[in-house]
Length: 90
Image 1 (tube, rainbow, N blue to C red):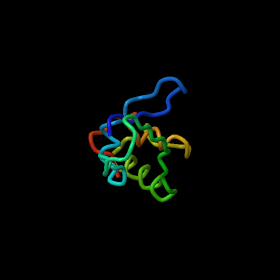
Image 2 (tube, rainbow, N blue to C red):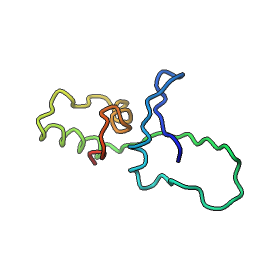
Image 3 (cartoon, rainbow, N blue to C red):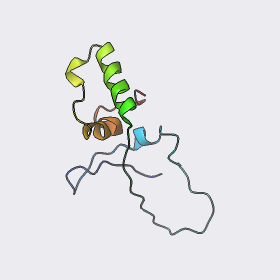
């Protein structure tokens, strides 16, 4: 993996490479030799409702009530680095 970024405003996103590298299901290197010199992979972050509730509970217990997430669209941005976590909180 060279870079991971949020979709941002459609033209420019936030670099979330450091956080993406902590997600175990995202491979950091390609295996084999039969792939193009340049390859772009796109995807979305998915968080089940239980994970969403757990994230808010963790925020609540840490006293960070102002950062509680109220909509289901926001966790992807939150998870992917807008808080600049060195380790994602879940």
